[in-house]
Image 1 (cartoon, helix red, strand yellow):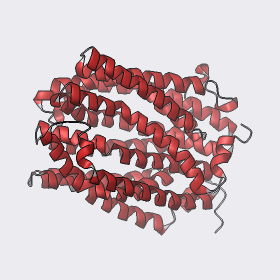
Image 2: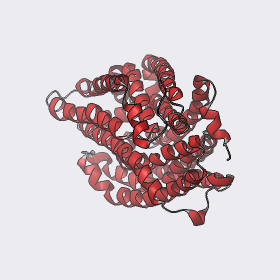
Image 3: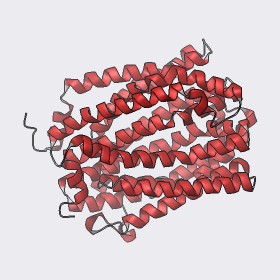
Image 4: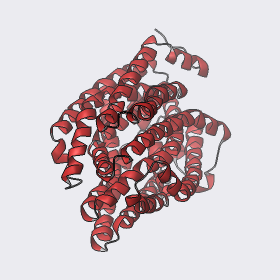
Length: 458
């Protein structure tokens, strides 16, 4: 990669076109990744029952909590590799690829041990209803048995995206989603294996996605090629990955801890509300897939352009990405609100569950676009390797705020309406702080100076 095409495509050209060309494969891939659990939810809800659907819903925060920290930690490799690609640093690219995969393998072992071993204890902590407790434990344990494959895929896909390839990770996920659907139909509907069948189908799909991404990485040319015998930690690269990844991982963990607090409050309302909340999470999933895809896009885009020292392009990409994300998420949220009863009916036929889900959507979804400035500002800062500040802002303004709201207000005013208000209020608070910090404007100069890079010409 004397001047690899992937880096050149992102550091040159019309910004909005480049962002969308990078964004849509990520979005489509994320959509199919989300389909793993969505298909489980639909089939379990319709062919197994409300208690099984509640078990999947109760398991979701546990899965996000454990996976979230380690996936966030691994995301540091994507940022570091993107900067090396932008700077055309061949040695750095080689070391980042092999250090990143070594980290994924190590984290996969840790996640498996934690997820399989501690699932019952964590489910107890969040007051999982007894009626679905055993099924929730079973689903968690089966899911986390595939943690190694999940980490390898996520790391490998992140490395490919950092090098400018967002299309092949998308194609892999499409294939694996089809495998997951076929597995669900066979194991749940055909062999009547219940929630265990849904979990096994998901793990099988994760294994296939990991094998596909490894196959591609091992066939890349030059310094981007993954070689099994060279997988290992390079000390300075690992330190830089951790500087970016640890704050990102803490942020995701804090988000999930706050969501566990919310889930605990949801569980106190009973099975119908737990199932309704699970259906809302799936119904609103596309919105958050779009949000996450824009976050990944701007992080990678900023990372390569920052590495190439194209600072004006870094700044312009933030505002372009924000405008695109607000417009798309805003329009989607209006449609979701308008058709909420129909969409919830995809996941369940229980009228009580649909009614509860519709109330939750009415109080949250129209505010979704407020989160987009948060996603874009945080992603841009991380793209430069500046990960601590956005983590602090989001933890305080979103996570701590929600925990406070649930513990001190929802416990006193025990209604779904009071619980739902925590989401838009936390987004508004966080967006205001990010705008104030970003518009003040010295964060990029400080980052440039801290790394000893060529100063920005203004």
